[in-house]
Image (tube, rainbow, N blue to C red):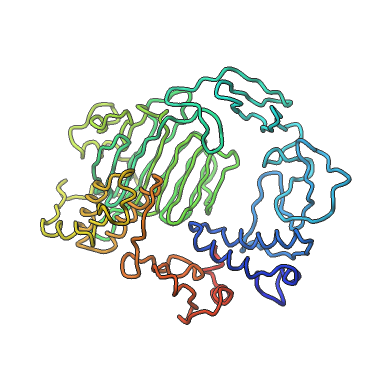
Length: 505
């Protein structure tokens, strides 16, 4: 679309600005910017911005099927909108506003003005305080000793600030305020293996739905939530994560192995969404990074799900000692994690797991192992799967995961890896899933992971669009055409791969 010289919506701009650098950037970003589906649209939009900044007329390029732009409430899309928008600070467009250059984007409807990034009636505008603008009903901290609130009619009220237990005042993500002193992490991976918030490990070889975590001791400052995890039986040897459901005070979210989500505010029918997603009240953000779906809530709860083999739930310290479920109570003591819903300690792992099973009417589920006894790995096979060419790569002090060892202990993931491969009778897929799970855990902890996939080992085939290459570790053969021939330019690659595989980004 960008590079078509004689036709297309950008033909007038080609004489002014060369599309080639933008085309190369667009193809590169689509491949390397963590798999975001809207990266191509952002790349094309960059060319639109450049053209319009030079006063060049751009014709309609967005359609309902390609890069449709969804505008926030009380706003609408314009291909060539005025450079002067009414704001809370300047509600009337000045007569001196130039007619050009225009720009495409979302513009407030008539009767609304910009308040930050939102379109609101002028009566709902926020406050200016010490030279900064704050939206209405926003709490902010001018300093760690003072907490203020922007109220009606631009009124700011302030009071002495105190952080709650398990919080401290500091700057985080550019925002000064009370932030958690730390976070607890619950991990579900592989066949599946559990590591509770307090670090206790156990396995569940079943195919049922369980309460993974929920607030059992509510408090005024806490947002109540429940996370359900649904296991499904695999191909005879492994039980995989099929989906998880998060219930918050404002509604219910279900994410599946495929990259889609259903969102159901209470008393409203289920609606299916593709990602990324931000709710209107901004209480929930869901996006995709590479193979991972990441859910953020305004309450500080974060869930990372790689749609098959790995689930990570992160909660702020304010939830310490107030949780229950398979993830434990998060009180710092792993020995009391196996509590039943009654509060009593379970006598066995099986009793603990069964007590958190969710009754299901529409399907029968299994606890996984016959008579509660699961098979063990043969000693010889265990030795084979422990080598560096297999699961041993996880704990190899000079391997691709060495930078992660100080942040995420490799031993649990190594043991889980050996277990899963043994249960899978040596299947390479089980090994790749185990390594992918440790990779996700490392990257979530901010650790750097070296290259471990190759053309022959756990290759990600048929997972990326053509301009991204084949992801086999060799950049020299990335510019391939559909028939396997080498392309002469990036433009040829993009043009030849204009199919549903590429246009779906």
